[in-house]
Length: 439
Image 1 (cartoon, helix red, strand yellow):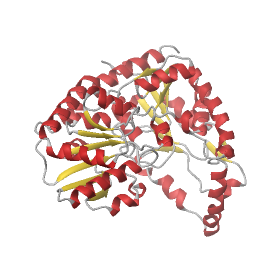
Image 2 (cartoon, one colour):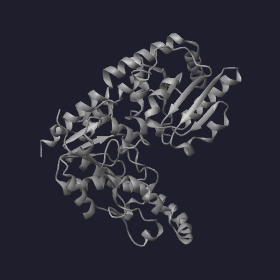
Image 3 (cartoon, one colour):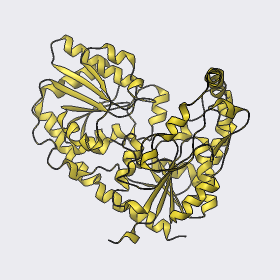
Image 4 (cartoon, helix red, strand yellow):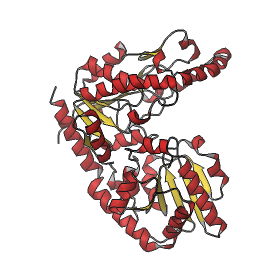
């Protein structure tokens, strides 16, 4: 297949990075793209993955301009193309701040929270510098990911200025949960819902993270919505995936991924179960692996047998997944967390399945990942917040090699049938190619 079969794609709202779920997801779904036919536009300080893409633009004050006098209270975020040697320049710029400005940030932070995050204080518009950089790339299709109001506004304005087909990919159901904290943010929410609906209706293609979200968005926004399964690069697991399921000594349970909304209490529950089993003499450990080590609940670390560490290189992930005895996929059980995760699907799911390591799914009934595991039988499901039930599930997985093998084999088979990145990426390429041809 020649390069022209892959439309020149401008990705707005995320970039390729080994240090985020969305960044890893992009690496897999764009795995067939030549590196010179993708470019990213995104804020933040995560280091880009240069193996996947050679063109990155980091948005800052030129695109998101804080109104005066508030700009005095916030350090500048430099805008511009990123090159490998300048990957940390934004971070360095952001920490240069006088003592008086640092002191001023405390009441400033409270003020922003009162305003629902302060997004109304920004003027949002692609800068001439950015537009020139984009036109030099000559994109054929705009692929967008958005979450908050300003990211929606920015994507709308990019689409208006470039005039090329837009493909939207929904990673989480932000319209269901965002801007509900206080009266001021709820006023902001009305504006957000209006702008988001406008963006969805303008899109040439809408893609959801799972079938459940696609069905919901078709009803909610009255437009066709596609879905794509989570992809995994199966070649990386060919020689190291589980093919025998004897228990390790010690028995290691591993959670790898983000810690934050909808994933906090469940980690504490698992840590407590492991602690209780260790008190009974079981040789079991719970490893929490996340870039957000500071977000791990303190209660987790108070229990014995719990380790917290940052991930190693992404290339080591298949080996690390396969070396664990059980992998964890989990979500919290409170109503707010359920709403936040109602149409989510963890980006790590396909890798967990491809490893052949048995998976314990701990989360409320009705979530897509919980029902997927129950329906297809690739994971041990605990769908209620019951310490005894959770502990019993861990005990069963520790005691039964037959159960571990059954779950592992089923997960590997489904990963090959449904989640092969080569197939998912090809289907995705066809979607974007059709969108590009509409221009």
